[in-house]
Amino acid sequence: MNQTMASEARKRDTREKIQLGGLIAKAGLRYEKRALLLGLLIDAADRIRCDETERARLLALGEKAFIDDAD
Image 1 (cartoon, rainbow, N blue to C red):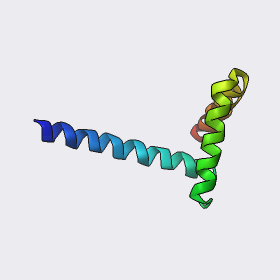
Image 2 (image 1 turned 180 degrees about the horizontal axis):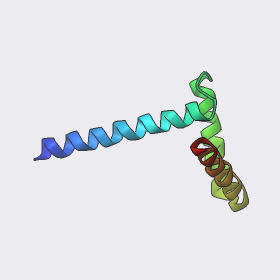
Image 3 (image 1 turned 90 degrees about the horizontal axis):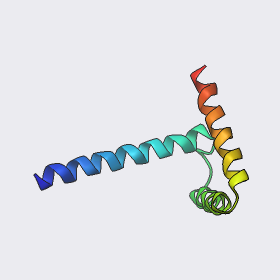
């Protein structure tokens, strides 16, 4: 039973990582250095924790990108 639960947890973790990698590609950042990507994410995380307006702006930008892809 524990082995089955661990296997399912690994599958979920792998799927999540693949989806997150897809977001990097979708943003057009596939070929950027990993250190740059991490820096971008750290900076964005700091900004959205401190600034609700920035959080809302970035959320709207991301939602629009998903909608545009659906068209």
